Image 1: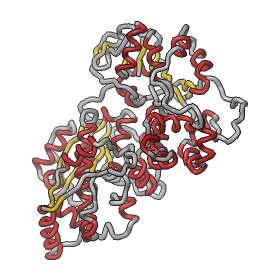
Image 2 (image 1 turned 120 degrees about the vertical axis):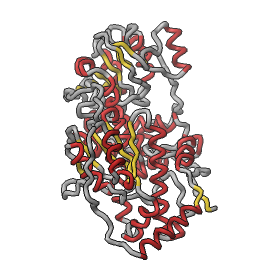
Image 3 (image 1 turned 90 degrees about the vertical axis):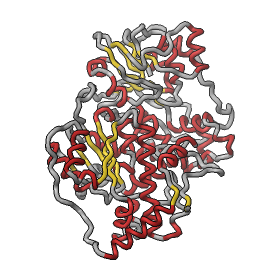
Image 4 (image 1 turned 180 degrees about the horizontal axis):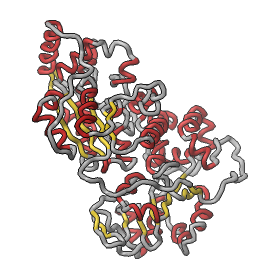
Length: 526
């Protein structure tokens, strides 16, 4: 991405749109204070040969008004992340531009760019499994809202749209470059041919990319392409002026969310935060109209854990965040299993947010699931927890599910422990995590430490227990003892499991491609 001060222009770089060539050309207009993020060594060599400025000011910067910053800028940064990192007057006064491409054509390019064809994975299988890539550019450059770019340059009409920017010589410099040469075969890979063979895949794209198809007038490919150019406007203008501030937050966060497995005291935490911080604090929005808007629906929960941050999941988060006003806290444990962390980062809210990782004694937590039969009816895991058959779990469940409901409950609790480690490992440098346990937070000292970590001072108020299980007595104690013995027999390190998952190239928000030798983290009995 580039922030070019002489042109007062911010380039938000989407994927598979010729963005690297455009970035190289645009860097020729940058001064010493402009921000240029690094690209590949081969492309940097091309930029040096042209005598254009290379990577600069992407780790520390001096803004035009003289004040200095230490924001980290990087390739394919989302518009929300950029907005949160730049001064408000820069975001509001500079023109934000990006490049957009027909989703039917872009996904074919991605298929060959990732060399998926060399792994004998059919195109339709790739799209079906990797469908979150269809919404990837919408995550980087939202079509609407305060983070939406001002101008969308259309890949299919770049000469027209680049010239419409009115920057002398830009098209000439851009059109002479060919960074990241196309790996796609020249014959038989045009959209009309490909989707004639895979009509169901075209249906999927039509569904997932409906908003951009309607916005830019893209048409479903047909076997005999229509040579008439679709009637589109020139560079598309978003018409949504930016609002709010991108300035760095103060010591107190604007937003507080919770990463938790559930049955860990999230209802109590919501009341604790409201009473001690004197801010709106919600546990779980359960109104009839809340599902799908404020609360993820079953489709969102299953979709994220099967396909990653696909279109409906991205739409859910954009809508939810648009309706929030700071300060605000929510201890809804379903959010962390439906892309909360990725959505905070993508939408630029990470610098303004603290995420509380709330745990409970693991054996008691698991016993609570078992005694409530939480994994007996499949709709409960779909809506509230996780299911061992999801495509994108970190922890292999095969050693535990043969034990029945108690094994599934143990798997789920350990999967969540692995996910806590996963998110801290990947996003700890972008987002502040505060960790506590229900047992600790329920003490005077632990409660005081928690509110201090949230930027507040003073004596902490301790609300009474909420949403506690009514099941007590010898049966519960015996079950807890049994679970503790089972946990002691397992060799499980959440940090090692999470790091192994990451090092194999896996991510929760973008499912790994299917491979015959695919493995996930395992637990072993001693």
